[in-house]
Amino acid sequence: MGNDIFNIAISKGWAIWACVIFIVSLIGCVVFLYTQSKIKVDENIDGSANTKGNKWDETLEEYNNPLPAWWRNLFYLTLIFSFIYIILYPGIAVWGGIKNWTQWTQLVNEAEIHENKAQANLSKWSALSVDELSQDKNAMRSAKLLYLDKCARCHSADAGGFNDFGYPNLRDQDWLWGGSPKEITFSIENGRTGVMNAHKDFLSEEQIDEVANYVLLLAGRDFDSSKANAGRDTFNTYCVACHLQSGKGNKLLGGKDLTAGNFNWGSSITKIKEVISNGISNSMPAQLPILGKERSHLLAAYIWSLGGGKLEEESNSARTSCGSNPNETAKFYFASGKSDLSNDAQSCLKMYVEFSQNNPNSTIVLSGFHDSIGDPVYNAKLARDRAIVLQDALINAGVNKLSIETKKPENTLGSGSNAEARRVELTIN
Image (cartoon, rainbow, N blue to C red; front, side, top):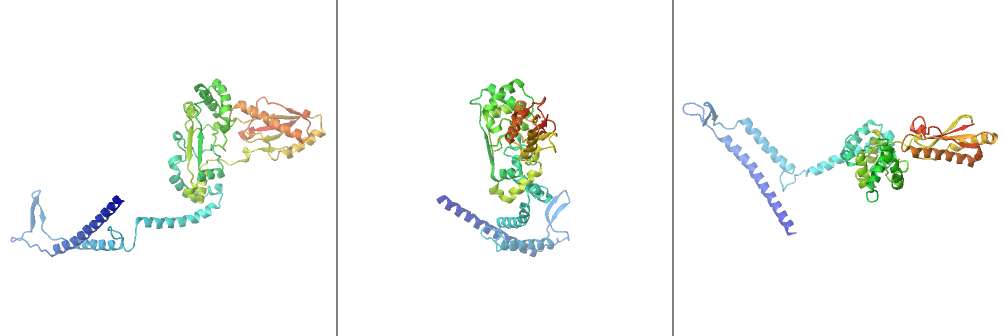
């Protein structure tokens, strides 16, 4: 407390001393100008100009003349301006000016004016969906400035991220916690914390090397096949809770989709082994307390406009393509990594149930296919499981089990896009 009183006394003393110096200096300038304007300099007796007696370069001399009137008057105006300024504004330490102006009050006032203008746009933009807002050019110009201020230090100015530090690319479709507009907004508002435990305490270096090669297999990169096959069982024992057996990741836990081939901490086998061995921990702070609801919504739209995230598209969901009659091939499509039938599957099955009951000698043939993402062994099993699910649905609907045949295709990899490949085909023999 004593030190505080001493510091206050010292600061007030210096403030008063500064004011005295300022006032004396101004008065001194006025007196100096006045006295100098009254001095008259006479010419020499011989009529030559009166000089200070100094010479440079043989002929260069300094005249002993009074200040020019224009310069002297300009100096007076400067002093008058100084006095007026000091009266209006805080130019000396003990006087705040009659306008009571400070840099802080000006900043607050200007920020309030800006916020009032911005609020009109924010209210309008918040009524739009993320997808609709992402197409508004004016909104995206404002959103880019917001992104550069709040997000660029971690995710880079172009949203490409910094892999060496584990900061993800926001322009791709590989999102740990889901990349739909709703999920992106939730991540921005509430933040995320992801942890992968270290495995070096219960896995040998050899096992870690094998699992790393299996991860490379899932990612579609070059791998050692013998090590990858050995690492499959270890992966299915220790890693499936977060990454699922398919390797696509459990987004409820922030599990990485290993089949996407993107690794935030580096994609070399050395880096992958290091992450498996030592684990990682990443945290994104919640932005809702900082940005508010409307600006978080605007920021989500900007990230969406860059191509980041992905909609829960119909092509990535279970669906059914049913023919107009039983002689046409019906196709039952499945979501990635899933074996659940679509909601409209039952209406299609009804036609085949009636046909089978009316034609007991016919056979319903089911053939399952999978996409090209992930472990081929797991995918082949998943294709069979999907055919079994459809077989059970037919039996439950009234088809004789003996009238159904599950036939493994010569090549279980389906044709077309990945969404087209994940299917079971139903034909009649």
